[in-house]
Image 1 (cartoon, rainbow, N blue to C red):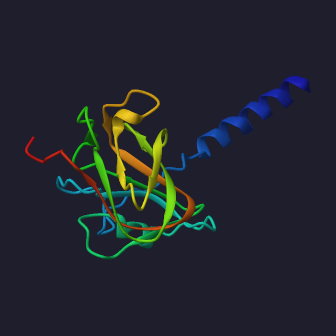
Image 2 (cartoon, rainbow, N blue to C red):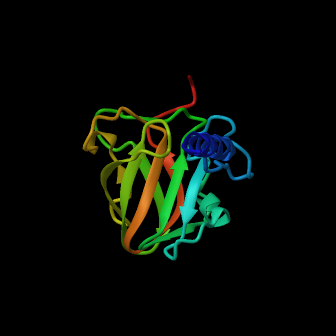
Length: 173
């Protein structure tokens, strides 16, 4: 009886494991598709969640592409994660700022994080404000020479983000 119970338990576990799926976030560009051609502006939305914790991809996609006066509000508690996928990431230029966040309105602070390759594991890089809207990869707490993804987490107030731009990278490769 004991052996039959163990076999049944093993079978149930195997069937359950076969039914598991990995929850992967869809990554979208401004057209609702995957990343497109090379651009020096963020081209992929990983996630945007409001301060209330609700997912709002339509609002998040307002931060993609060149500045166009359509913005997403990164308020305290909100999370905006975008990628420079078509560009292949933003390269640390060694001296000075690497990413400019185009902020059109608001006063507040967002914690800035970067991810080299997967959009899941982020490294804290520093705080971003309306008066200091740039990210310098050399300031990361761990060495990172190329950032494909950038995440902004609203800490206080609210920042109206129009676009994120790689300052010195080009699409000439």
